[in-house]
Image 1 (cartoon, rainbow, N blue to C red):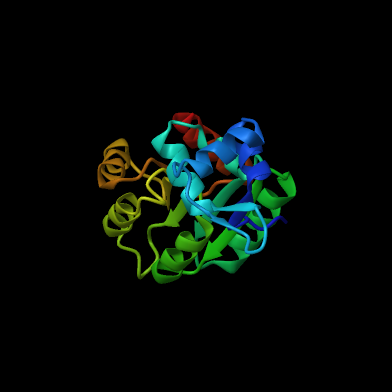
Image 2: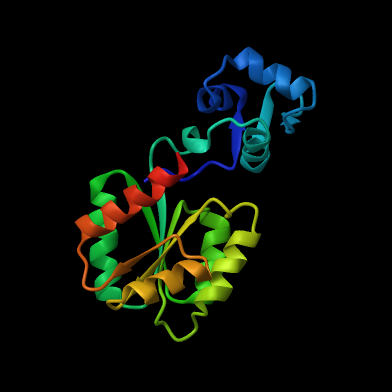
Length: 192
């Protein structure tokens, strides 16, 4: 599993943005793209957070950032369920998955991991669904994340109420990995 890099070279930024390295150097030298030079060298380094800000400001699609893997945060306290889901999703090769046991863990992990998709079991004790959705939406780094509720079967009205609270979708128990992947794909298709 590849760890997401925090600092990139101009060549790596060029690949992500689908431009020539010379173009990235121009962005850097003009001050449009912030970063720093390696002491004693002319090599430039660009922090990931600066690159994301630059890409958003200039309408450059963010899908080049991840090398194709979708980051999924699963907020669930049932280890039997999480172990099998994580294993199945990561074996698929398209997903990098982290698990949080509750709301507090989810906040810390989301900040570090910057997930594309957040699945939240809304019946966990410390989960306030509406508060979690608004906190995620208020965080500029996470506002593009898709938030999906994991819930028991719902009526159409209850599903609509969840969407009003800020969820992008919901997944009713019982579900299998194929249904979860379909839910991820459906949510991501809204983004692109």
